[in-house]
View 1 (cartoon, rainbow, N blue to C red):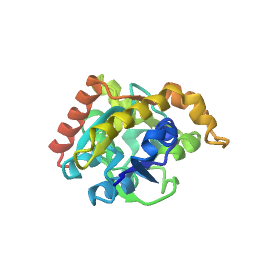
View 2 (tube, rainbow, N blue to C red):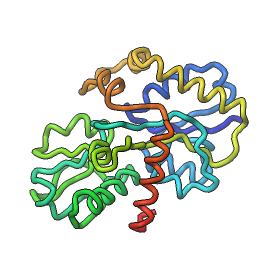
View 3 (tube, helix red, strand yellow):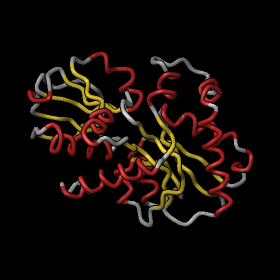
View 4 (tube, one colour):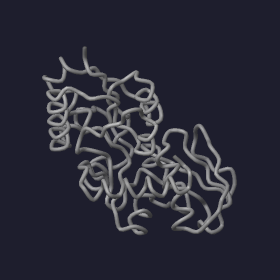
Length: 249
């Protein structure tokens, strides 16, 4: 039986997708599907897939969760694709609209509000769009929508940068997580394929055969980081600690 792998269908996973889909050994070992962050996490939780790159905020909800790779989606400072946008400074914001696609970002902005910004806005959920209800509101915008629409707002807060400046640690947005023990030969081939994709970003971009409305080369080379270092694992633990203190997990 093939290992069922789900991938977040965002621009930041282009190198992984390229490496995994071009790996001949994996073609006989794995099947692939795509979705947005909350969707692939739910698939992993319900055992519809065996492995997925999921937002780290979803990890505690996964039965028998195991990080099986030293590759991830992270940023040391600016990430440019995980933003809080508003038309007023934070101290004038009374409502923050969360994003249904990413539990990690929703938790992150609440941690920053309490421990870093010292504000107490109302938090509400929204399903789509990036429009603001009024000038006293702010909205989380992630992924390609953030890269395409940030210029439309007067105030844009990069959440990776806000975390880094507060805690002097890079932030991990997503990691490769399995819900069961996977065969060792699969794990080895999987990590080799991720490594290949990360080392061939130009080829990965070219394989998309599309025009991007933002600087995809700069984004993948200078905004996103793909290696899960020990320091980044420490950052994940700090995130979980703060989230538990706030009873957000």
